[in-house]
Image 1: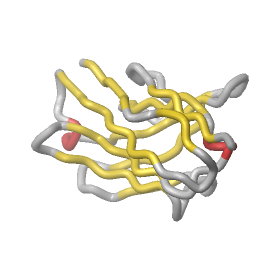
Image 2 (image 1 turned 120 degrees about the vertical axis):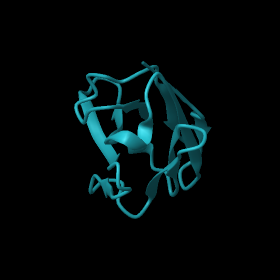
Image 3 (image 1 turned 180 degrees about the vertical axis):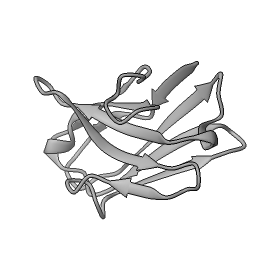
Length: 113
């Protein structure tokens, strides 16, 4: 089982990024999938979830700005991030659990002017 996040980078406040998470060894649509993040010096924080049926959930801090989605054919999870803020700066991971225990390799998002 592997999870590989990509798409991070440097963006100014108000900008957008789209993260991808390529999964192998299992089918992402067969269960819950999560995006979590870890800001410098802080604990891992749950960001968003998608159920097998496609229901989506968001942390209050990102609700209305971030959108989780998936492409079943590509077995890939996405996180569209709009209206980015400096406090969104973190390493973002996709995971099979909300705590991030099963997270794969992350991608760094830096929001700064």
